[in-house]
Image 1 (cartoon, rainbow, N blue to C red):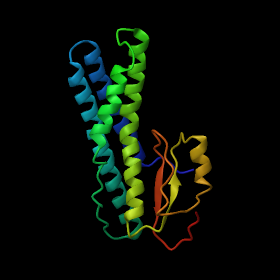
Image 2 (image 1 turned 180 degrees about the horizontal axis):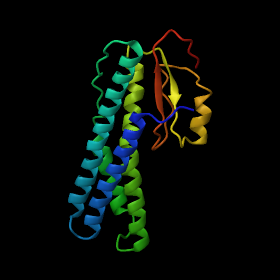
Image 3 (image 1 turned 90 degrees about the horizontal axis):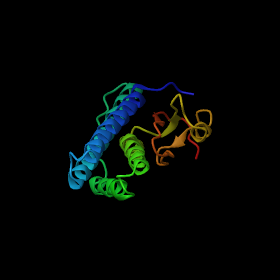
Length: 193
């Protein structure tokens, strides 16, 4: 198992911070301080911005890792979040805000849990997709190993396969909120599928 990297720790902090911000906006809506449209727009935009930060963080982390591994400067790739990110997030937030009677305590708690999960997982997932994309696009990478977090789930531990090297073109399997990430291999080390 691999120790949690600074990149993984930054991702966790980004997810936690985004979750707190989204929950504060939801609370303002539930308290009547924001209209439906204001809450919808603010929560979706907050998470979309964090997705952009997660994507940029992945791009910089990959460049730094490759610079260290190759011994020469490797530039960032200019990775960007999906073009439809904000629209997709608006739909997700709309579902949270309209699914149930938010005057009911149980429905409010469900909305809080879903908002917290969306705020935490989205930037982590965006970073994971970006890191996968960067691994596949980088001319310096021949493959990758699965980097595990200290609290990696059973599936991630199985996929680690004792440091198995996957082909660079094969996207690493990710699940919501997964902070495990590919560790690039830059040598001619044999890769498996």
